[in-house]
Image (cartoon, rainbow, N blue to C red):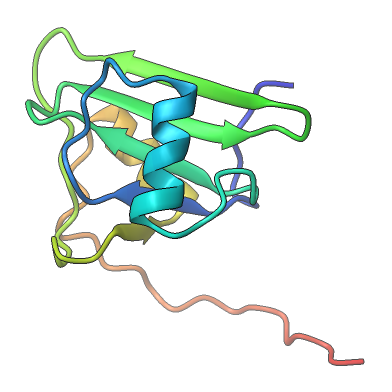
Length: 120
């Protein structure tokens, strides 16, 4: 099934990315620049220099899925983060807002109750 959900981890690659890159080249960025495995289940997000194109790379159990969106006007807004870091972890809600063009720079996440983790 082609779906992304809140149970996944999302990593925004911090550098502008050439959108001519496809599966193998994007996997190479994840492996060589982030020192992570592209098949670890995380979703890796890449945005081009003009910020009008975005690609999401996701390992779907038996192969990679590549989601691609091009804006006809406007730009994708990067959250504020340290550009020297290789990637920035984002929540599913932030990704949805980013792709839908909602500003995520000044969003403050309120504290929510979470179930305690049981250690066995």
